[in-house]
Length: 510
Image 1 (tube, rainbow, N blue to C red):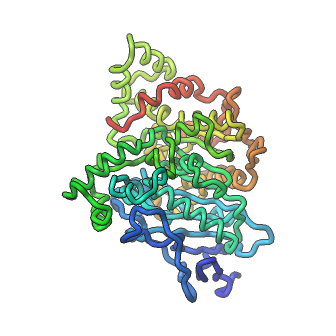
Image 2 (cartoon, helix red, strand yellow):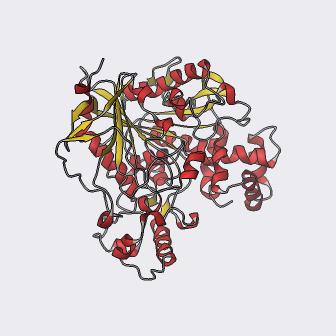
């Protein structure tokens, strides 16, 4: 048994005391940068001041300000306490002093860059840690605190060094903390896998495209990343000016903006926000992420990327009616050609709502996997594509169109048991758990094995690297039921067409 003496570790900033849960060491609420409050609001995260003595690391750190009800409804649960002082991370490890340093897996939570926290139950790191990795989750600035532009703030920077993507800088600061400290938790700082879902996946891809993240991680996993374009900095500045005027600050100074209450931002009209994407044109993301990938300028690192069978489930929360996608095609097509072409790709689907649901899924999510994998291949770097279509046995009547946005998370993180209380009315079955064990095995083996020279990820079956010549995609489930199959030419005609159309068709306006 692991005793009380063994749940302490020394970091560069000071000593931490954690807990042992089922033979796994857990350290919660570890600060990875100075609190971004007062004069540090809308600035790059600053270094921590070391502390004296032992710091308690048994409780979650505060999450960024957000809509609690919204997070409970669709974000994975109650995010806990809110504060502008939110730069905290959590670590699960099976050994503090292993004979060989362990792979590190870093989870960036989703939530449209407006909700979520690293302490939510679906992201529990115990299960993966118990299988031989160090798992890290983190909080970062959300909403206007995480993404903001205003001329008054621009004046604080030399030309070409403006920062607007503070949330991405928070994630970079957490990766820097890992480089300094993860050895104290048994982790290998030379084998860090960065992974995330939804806006967390967009974060992964954005950090693939950022010049500031070089050397801080070594491979990436992007779950349900979307093709929505990044916000141009010019537009973000206009939104920042509009926000200031909303608070009666027509010629706002930086100090006036920083004096606004932190809790005043999240209830604002979504039209004032920049999300659910980053801002393109600052020093963190000089060019739009999609442009970086399509031009082959992304970091040369292995990538796993995929999406779910009913991603359109999330669009209603953005106010998008799937049928409106078809209506828009009708309005913009020429002599009916485009809609006829699309109908040919969805044989037997005639209802506008059903067709719109599938088209929205594929152009917004499925195609992102194809675009990124093609960019990786053209850059001589390995990529693996997947499609998740499994639904838990006791919930299949609730999900007639397939796996909802985010529902793959407890399978890839193998956190079904952590969700037992939440799923009491529709409990997970042993078959669900067996499938989660197999799926998460691929994630673990990617973290353990994947390099620039890898040709496959170990599993049953082995998962070969993606190539455009055969376009083999791993299907995790089919029509809601368990299966692990490699499909050749997966949705090829759809993704090839939508790759060309996505710039004109992917919008949030319903």
